[in-house]
Length: 513
Image 1 (cartoon, rainbow, N blue to C red):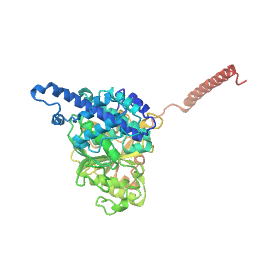
Image 2: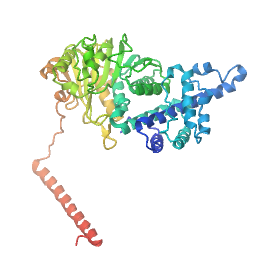
Image 3: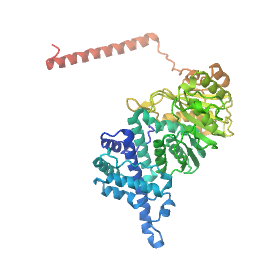
Image 4: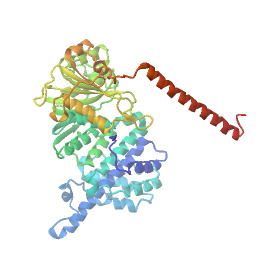
């Protein structure tokens, strides 16, 4: 069974532990900027150095190693002299190392406008122990992150992603603001299959949806740039993480010139996306919905000011192209809430025949919450002109029993489980490469509009898929009882033996007399 944590490169766990050991008394929320900033610096410096050496070798042919245009033409960041890694490595043990790094970050931003106000300048703060910072520089400096071979393997991207997930875990609920577990992102991307077109995430966090979408395209024979990326993020810190996360992979994305609230300052008001991928904040009650009562996006009903779930759903629908499809994460309550406003919105969306598929996921997948969540898939055109027509029907998948605990509180879906769910959806939509669809009791079921109406427009998959069929047991009852009784007696005898052995050992050390 293969898991999808995205960081299967051997040293990432050891690297994180070593870096975390240098954290001292800093909170993970602060420390992540220190570490991720250094990883970013090392990556762009390595890539710069490789291009620099090439240009140095071509000087006789007119190449200029100190010309920024020579780097930008190759999609490599220009790194000014004061920001190159050897400068930091040689001064790692000096007390002014923090100031050198902060100045280097500012120099990079100045010459690379897309990074303006993005990079962390936290290295000269009193809270950061400079001796430990020097050790961290040595640690990061031992990894070749930006050379051509490692860039092709996305080593830095995967280390960066692993660190994001670990910091999310360390921060607990706050971590969920910037990181969606990769197995959930992968499942959404595999189900939507965004080969080409415009992708939009109005709650983009650290950009994981975009990274996974680009990976999907490349894995299926496409190339960087087959998709156009649009995003928005309300938290300034998280918006910066997203910009850095995409920059290290050379992914061009329009995340707006600043962080902004999607409800109150839509940075892409005219965008009609082919795909919407999102994991918006669950059950947000502080979204100031009372200020947007007459908003044009509320075509299916005004969402309550006490919960933004159905504001997000309608925001996604509003930004979908005529043949667009959206896949997003919501709290389970969105499928069954009976509050007047939310039930009415859900009913109207269902009756408009927009709900394509519902997937119930197991609990403990997220760092921000241990409650189970669900995936919604909204389609503007269920006929879609490509595969089987599914008008008036919705696919329900109950995946609550899938996943495996990877530690005491976190669960992951394996690659095989992601494929099982995605293939079921694609087969249902008529994709000939996914095989033939059929209802499987306890796992998946096609429901008609009439069936959904009969359940008061509740979308919980468990109501539709029924119970898993059990294999027929043809062992006669008397024989089964004889067999089970013999097993029980054997286990009880073994228990008596162990109890006797324990008491004998206690006596040997002076107890249990």
